Amino acid sequence: MKEKLKAIFTDRFASNPVFYASAGRINLIGEHTDYNGGFVFPGAIDKYIMAAVNVNGTDKVRVFSADMDQYTEFGLKEEDKPAEQWACYVFGVCREVLKRGFEVKGFDAVFAGNVPLGAGLSSSAALESCFAYALNDMFNENKIDKFELAKIGQSTEHNYCGVNCGIMDQFASVFGKKDCLMRLDCRSLEFEYFPFKPVGYKVVLVNSQVKHELVDSPYNKRRESCERVAKTLGVDTLRDADMAMLEAAKTQINDEDYMRAVYVIGEKQRVLDVCEALEKGDYETVGQRMYETHHGLSKDYEVSCEELDFLNDLAKECGVTGSRIMGGGFGGCTINLVKDELYDKFVETAKTEFNEKYGIEPIIIDVVISEGAHKEE
Ligand code: GLA
Figure 1: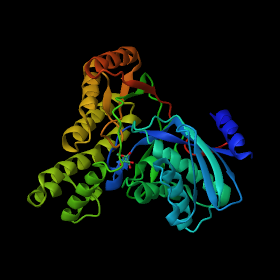
Figure 2: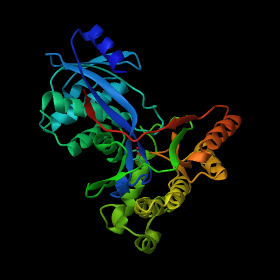
Figure 3: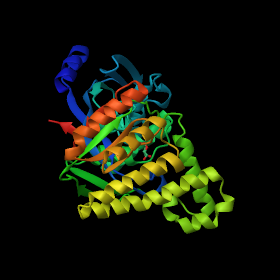
Figure 4: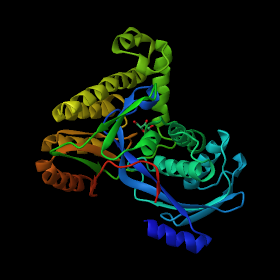
């Protein structure tokens, strides 16, 4: 990819670029908990966005998306927002860096990636983190700390892309470390690296190819439900709520919001259970919690879809240790924890049966837990 970007860049802009990359992510467990102040358990993966970048001495950003074969340019003022959605990610990052009092000047960039789009692997966070990292390195002597880089990506989503997301994806993309998952407490922002190399198991994603699209999606509605319940319970976020509090206030909460809160409160504990189980090498418990999360996401939080429920049922029938929908939902992938000896059978069954039912083969994605945002040497 680097060679390809280099060729396009020198051809278009006739100068020598520097290369930056940042990763997509998986999340073993802890879904829709980040904006509720709860725990998440993600890791960066070996699918990434890479950008070739160089200053251009003007006050304009000129950027080419190699994958989309589209070029655009924009200025750095608030009113210069580009029309193309993909470019708003880059523009938003520039604006958020500037708003924080840091420097951004005109630059040229070409980027490409291999994070599948709309699969729930956070291609947009990878793009934001890649550019946030690049702007920090090129214009700010890396003075912006890593959490702020993640927040720059998150604010880009909020202010320029219409998704009121939590911090998980950008955090994972910036902080990712090879062979490690990270348990992040989204209230205190404290986190811990957990070495993750399950012996005898593989982590495999099955992409339903149902496009998940969070912009203008019910994602924001889910967040609003949670905030309403928190307010009724008199707490900052659902992190500070438990089932007893929820039950006591049940009559003041509408049925839908109640179900959302049941899921979130349960998920908080499931992440902690999984961390504890992992430390003991108890993958059966890890897997059980994953299935419980799927059930909650499907029935209480209602962010699954028929195809993903089908894939989850298939996993269960095949004897897969753990399986659940991953990411924001409304399409995308399931994440599966599969015993080595079951891997071939599961992949084959998922492909065949899904294809028979929906007329399209799901895409199998093997992931390796990898480094997050960095400069390519
Ligand atoms: C999306 C958001 C994240 C998080 C997940 C659900 O990926 O960007 O902040 O809320 O959904 O866990």
